[in-house]
Image 1 (cartoon, rainbow, N blue to C red):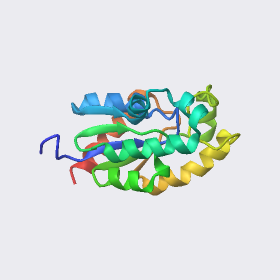
Image 2: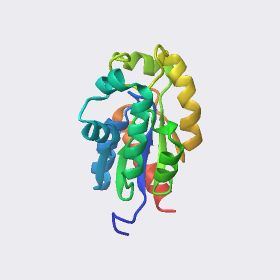
Image 3: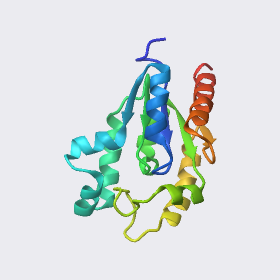
Image 4: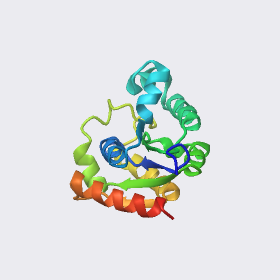
Length: 174
């Protein structure tokens, strides 16, 4: 099957879960293109995410993200989505039709340890919403859209990559 017609892999999860880091490695392993939708959003906006949230609000960032999701083809690619991609029902339906959606599930405590820039990272969240509240709200959506959930707690990058390669290969060969 050609790269243009083979299903892709879409990574979802909270910011700092490792979507971009593991996505690059997964794409290299499979010899396919990697797309980071946060970078795509910044390109079309001509701004970094935090500056856009500051100037236009979190709802505007979610709208821009939905536009990027709907314009992206997932066939033959690994796509790391922004953490708020799951707020777009139509965007996720579009990606799920073309890809296996993998939820990188990092426990809240580890996420809190990793995320040192919560207020400056460009996260599409309500004003004054806490990381804990955002985690609880989004986790339900990640579980809803995931074809595969991977527990990322206490795993090295190499362990996580090996698990994802195995799961992706098995799922995509069905």
